[in-house]
Length: 476
Figure (cartoon, one colour):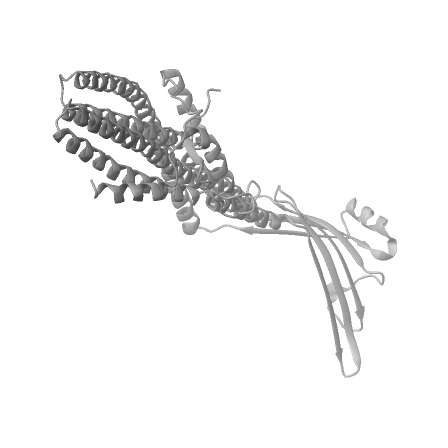
């Protein structure tokens, strides 16, 4: 028995104190989830994906910013001032492809081009540029904005995908921590019971009611259980360290896990998995799953690109411009009079049409193929997600049934152990059979604990399949 004492001392040193439920604080899965889902750096980094996408949208909207342009030219040669030319304008793009431009120009000097001649007070202009062919329905600017908005939707789906996968990993680690905690408590109870039985056997041997060989049997069993307790304690400490690494406060600083804090499955009781709930989960997944959201964003990008390409094949590139002119000497009213007259204005037009349109047709073919490809991807994604939801729901329902069966197995194994113990006390059984029955109880308890830990992971897996955070959403 001298070899047993160092093992017991090592266990007590690692354990610090005897596991006791009255001195511990439960750290439920819901509490753990809220801390991880709101404060962990991985979640914070994922949120930056949306910020980056918002920047892309803002950049695309910049194509519609009003633009102020101003220039001044002067030419002197041989002591003669040829000209001073001032030109300033404000261009206001609109979401409809029409550009409004207001300008002012003034020329002074002796030598300049005839088309630059202006009244002494300068010349005011206010005109519109209207596309009548390509770019009437959609142009480069509107296409870029549509692409950026779809990219933002893709970023939202990507953020949710990253967070969900991370929360699934975190839920599995919590389940392992819970399993290690329960194994540690069970191993402590097993050691305490074996030590009690060893003392009882010694008293029976001293009284002549049992053989001395039973002392060795009881001591060997205590030694085995002490080794298992040592392993369970180390596993629990390691699992606690891993879970502690997932905890951060609102100041982005790692949190410490109190030694008295233990996992708890309170609030995570089994819920029925019926056909109505499964259909509800499928409906949620089809709308909210990150993969669906990402592929839908790709489809919208491809639709915008194809829409932009189709007009380049069938519609010529044409534009009309009308810019009334008004002398600055007449005040702003002169410009108003010019608008109503057919003179004092600049008219313009442009027309461009590729005869074979090889480039445009190639772009249209590529855009159409990409759109069809994304539509197929969306159909496959929805099918795969439906399969994932159904299999995850089946796993959860099976675990629920297994847990119920395993709890009954634990009760039945305890009844057999208690019956064997009574037979041993009256001399109708052996200590070996009692220990065998007790090992069966421990094995059944370990199976139950493992199933409870798997249930946490199964619920998280179902949540990820649905596209919700790492727990089964409530019926709504």
